Amino acid sequence: MHAATLLDGTEVAVKVRRPGVVERIREDLEILRTLAAAASRRSRLLAEYDLVALVEEFAHTLRGETDYLHEARHAERFRMAFASTPWLRVPRVVWEATSERVLTLERIMGVKIDDLDTLDAHGIDRRAVAERVAAMVLTMVLRDGFFHADPHPGNFFVADDASIGMVDFGMVGRIDQRLQDQLVWALLAFSGGDLERQVDVLLELGIARPRVEREALRRDLAQLRSRYAGRSLGEIQVRQAVGDGIAFARRHRLQLPANLALLAKTLAMHEGLVRRLDPDFDLSSAMASYSRRVSLRQLSPGVLGRWAGQGALDWGRLALELPQQLRRLMSLAERGDLEIGMRPSSFEPVLRRAERMVRMLIIGIVAAAAIVAAAVVFAALAHH
Image 1 (cartoon, rainbow, N blue to C red):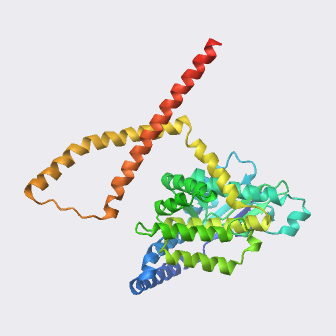
Image 2 (image 1 turned 180 degrees about the vertical axis):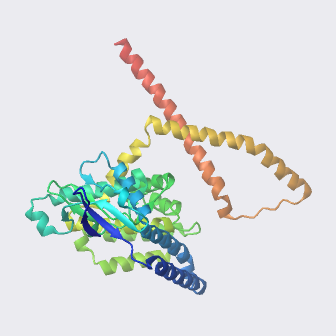
Image 3 (image 1 turned 60 degrees about the horizontal axis):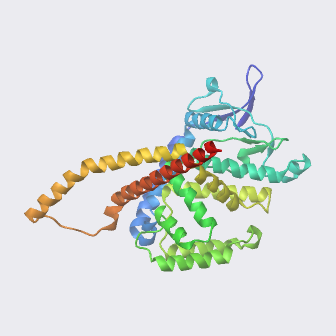
C-alpha cells in the first residue's frame, strides 16, 4: 500500500497491481494442482486429505486477491456490516480512483496492533483491544458468515480510544447458514465435557469419516483434552501439541474439509493475536460465551417460525413425492428388478432431510407449548 493525497486533501492508501502478476500466479497454481493430483494418486494418506480441493480453495482465494474490484466490494460489505459498531473502523472505498488494477481506500491511522510498547505508552487498554478483536472475528463468522481471512498484525491499527481499524480485504472467507449453525453447536460441545456430543460434531462437520471407530475416537479425544485443557498457551510446548494433534488426526483418518481449512487458519491467527495483546485472554471461552448467546437467539419466535415454515414445506414435498416413489419401488419389486445395496453415503441426503423435518416438528411442538404457556400466564395476570 502507498500513502497518497487526493486533490481535495483527503489522505488515502493506494494499492497498485504489478504487471505480469496474474499470469505468474496462474502458472504457479497450475503447478500446485499438478503436484497435488500426483501426490494424491501416489499416497493413500494424502488422497484422504483431498489436497486437490485444498489447492482449489486456495486458488479461488488468491484469484480474488488479484482483482481489486473484488477487494473493494469486500471492503464495502465489511463497512456496511459494522456500520453500527463504533469501535471498528473500515475504510471507505474511493470508487472514482479504483479499478481492477488500482485500489484506493480512505487511510486508516493508528498504532499497529502488535506494537505493544507504543500501545502501553499511549495508555491503551490491551485487554479491551483483545476483547474487541475476539468480538470482531466471532461476529464475522457466526453472524455474517463473511470473515477477514488474513488477520496478521499489519492489517489492524489501534487508535487512542482503543478503536480498531481494519485494512486489506483481498482474502476473505464465506460460510453458509447451515455451517454457521453447526459451528455454534460445535463450540458449545467442545466448551463442555460431553465427549459423545464432541464426536457427533466431528462427524457432522465432515472431519471424521462415517466408518470411524467411535469408541476409540472418544477415548483418544478424552486423553487429548485432559492433556491440554485448562493450560495457558505459555504452559504448552507447541511442537508437542502439534505432534499430538497430527498423530490424533492420522490415527483416526480425520480430514479438515476445504471450506473449514481457511476458517481454522483464521481462528488460529486471531488466537495468536489476542494472546499477544493479553497472554491471559482465553479466546475459547469467549467463543463459547458468544455461541451460547447465538444459540439463544436461534430459539427466538422469529427464527422458530422460519424453521417451522421450512419444515412444513419439507413435509409437503415428502407427501407429494412419496406415493410416486412407492409405486416405482413396487413396480421394480414385481418385475424382480429391485436390488438393495447398503451404502451409508447414499442415505445421507435422505437422513439429512429426515433429521431436518424431525427438528422442525420438535420446534413446532416447543413453539406451541410456549404459546400455550404464555396464554396461561397472561390469563392468570388478567385475573389479578
